[in-house]
Length: 329
Image (tube, rainbow, N blue to C red):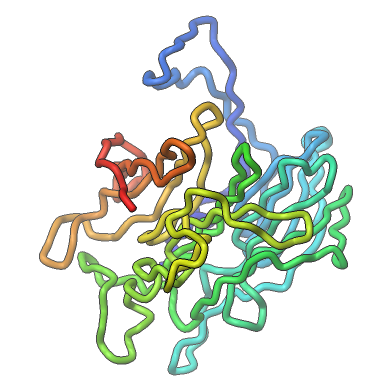
């Protein structure tokens, strides 16, 4: 399983810098020509890099799964270890067998007003308790101020079996923070679904997490972080505050492993890449691994539209999108 993880395919940190060619095309439905982008190697030799965020003065903040928080200075090419956050990196099953986990340090993002408040958000696996934590720190220069730490949100998890953590984050224009959370469910046998109601197999059953309106796993969450380290709930999430047996933080649900999200700066639509199931053909156990979900923001921040993304099960390349319809309350 670990051979399929994103960090095993990362040998260097690449940033794709776009350069407009002489020939321009204003049609947003036409793919840009490949020669408009140049790949530049900025640094190498990292230890399982997970996510990056941009800081002022040509600095890039990135995190590594084992807890490393580092800054790359684009001007000098120097990489500085800012801190090592204690995180859990192991699973221990019911038989006591210990193996490497997918979790650890899973995500990072700078606050939109970082130049003023120096706030960054980290999403990580707590080193002792079975939970994932979203916390805020102040990062001043190359110093992470430990006393500034504020825990914003906690997601209870299980650490007996693999897989799927999520951990991607993005802010929208209103200052709302989107956080992707994986299903924390055992991978099913090839071609089968994540439904297992047998006694003792609760970690293999997605009904307990992605399909559970009162559980934060297998979701994309949307919250509005406040200055005091708490958060409020924006209008338009799936469940209004106070709805019985629900969590108001939930923006979308039913996910396997929503990995990294992004927002269209013009429309406000939310897009994300998701790790789909492993099957290569349709069978009685479930559909083949071709459909992953994208969320499209509706009017007035309502639930909006659902899109389907067709992804190659062997190359993880997005092939096309197709409108599926409205999601209703």
